[in-house]
Image (cartoon, rainbow, N blue to C red; front, side):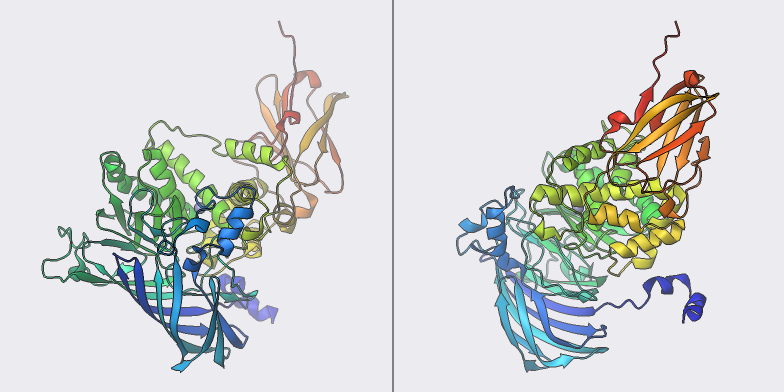
Length: 615
Ligand SMILES: [Zn+2]
């Protein structure tokens, strides 16, 4: 079989016997802006592409989290460092402030099914199993109430946006080769089935709606979707029905407000960027400058992280900070200019890391937040280089502070491994540091291990091979292995599954004949390839590079650096001794990892400076 596989194009091999489920939603929802209640119909065609026969299915009913006593409420009240946005607010909700989803009817292929609502999950007993390679149609009538805004979704957010409609519809739970993922909505993020969404939203005609998907009926809508038409067209009734279509996504978000300014901007890269915000004196200038900046950001992102595949993206002022969805984000909008650009870049980068590379955010939040934070750091640095961010300068190493904060955290004793399920970290701060910071460093450090060229190739290969799928940690590592030719399982085991730290130190440096002997010590368990730069008194420098033996490979010399590769370091050896043909008194400085890309928790023992009295 392997001979045949060898003849297949590379991309096919990467997928192996990968499969994923598929959905086609047709949702019709009508929202009453006086009661904040809605009624909806959902027709869902579900394709079972798995090799398994399914006897049950599950739906998420996220709005049920916003009720006193819910799992989200209990968790927020018992965790030692609750999210300030949640705190004990859910416990204090009155009946007209809560959120809920109710199911009025559910059929499978026209016949009623048995179902039970258990918190934020709808458990459905199928009356006939779904066999591998077949599809079935679920028809559902549902209704609900939009909670007041507490977390990610709801009405009347802190900046006065009427409706932030995230997690608003009964959403099929994903089934993959790990099985079902009916995770109760406790606080963390999402995972969804790839498919197509056809969504009709009926709402008071005064409201402008920003959403995932392409508007199908702009002429009936107006509201800035037709050049020069600000509100609803003159001949419309009291309500408008907005018809959106979103192909190949795994979620759908929308937001609505009667005071939105809606701006469309055709980017140089192609996609049309939409901006929805409540204009005021403070934010007007910022939002007017945003389209031009995001246009420039997209050029850089497309080149380095893969080409944005949709024709549209919407930046929508809504929600409680910044939250990513397919083809759209809900962001805060009244802060500083650099803050607005920062949150816009971060949330848009999530289009690559989670919205297109659809990792399970509950199991691999670091592949979502960490990768996004890494890419955002580079995009923001590039915008600074182009002098587009007032007061912010380009940095040779935008990760300096990130590393420092992780070094401090990793010695605090509350760190938990990246392999922890995101809802099950003991503290919110351990989750935050793991997902955002350690996940970010994972990539910058990978570049250190495999070299810049192989790393750049990895990021593009990862995107192109896994877009519109559900990659996991191993899938990413395999791409990095293939693009670098190195064995990298050890990096995954140490960085993802453990909390072992990295600490290398310079040991004795002694005169040896006509040269110098240098000893390097590994003082913490995690092994790494090592670079040591020796700078001579005349200012010239040579970098000595010792790969790890278990990498079974080495990176090429970085451009412009005098480079000498030494014998590989067997990880079992706590120290490494080598000699250089430079006399000790000719050495000005010896430094481990001079570019500061290795997450060494103690850099004070990495540098040796000869103090010579030259008079
Ligand atoms: Zn994020």
